[in-house]
Image (cartoon, rainbow over all chains, first blue to last red; front, side, top):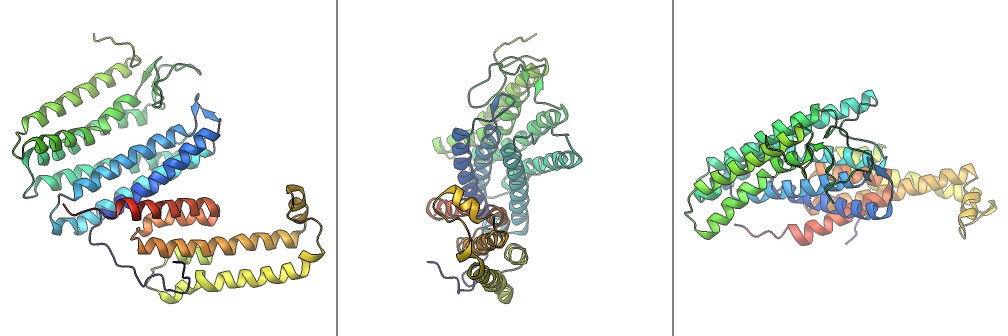
Length: 274
Length: 131
């Protein structure tokens, strides 16, 4: 197995399917998530009242879901599109962006420092700007993939439109919510006290407005809507498209509601509709 | 640094460049280590039987340098092995890069991440059936 004398390029052949690299990234992120969990269990350092490993863990798990979704969708493309230049570019762009975010977020966490909203030095300011650019690239890629799916032949209508609509709606909603969140200076609206109650695992405030639940909901429209289409298609290959539209509208409405709630400084646990 | 830069950045097709991290750099480091150890190790205080003994051993600058060369050489060899395994598993160079940088800076951490990624990719993800 271990042969140092063998030229390393002897068995290397470029993959015909660029989307395979999304699975490689999933493998890498899964290992990182396991290590991060182990670190979280051993390390009692905290940042803003939470284990400082919680944030990298959430981002690692989220990107696993993100890349796995993209890789599964890529299998629906015809061979020419799937092996084409555009797909290779999409994969490389999203890998660059995703790895950049994860490496920076994980190292900053390990050092006990903030990654987002960190304005402490010129370096951290530039990195925060870069993170914003990379995050936009991360959500643009699925939107482009959604458009590619729309013009593909031979995909069941409910599945096809759930992917196209879900990716574009997820992109738009995330762009608005995360764009506002990024410019807000903090994920809180109002003041979250040092030991205030939070939602388990997610760490969202139960005391004051928190913009992250809306970001979460918006981003995962990219999974929830295509999942709806997939289930519909499993139920019947020619299932109608309207349930997909209804689910998308409902998810967008709840995102808007939770976003508005946070903007008024209200936590998830206290509702006021007017 | 030259060895790692070659391993991480240069095309794998350049077989001659591949000799640098795999043979030349580790060989130079190993030779230099060997001489340092032969000259200084057997007359040094301390040993490997407790943390205090190790600390005492590395109070000697030549032995500290030798120790440094030891892990530079071995980390680079592990990096080369990981790179060749990852090439075989068709793991993109973009994904290899952070794993190799981690191996360079924090050897065993990079190795754990690299071997874990390889295992997962090979056994869970690669045999995806065609649609």
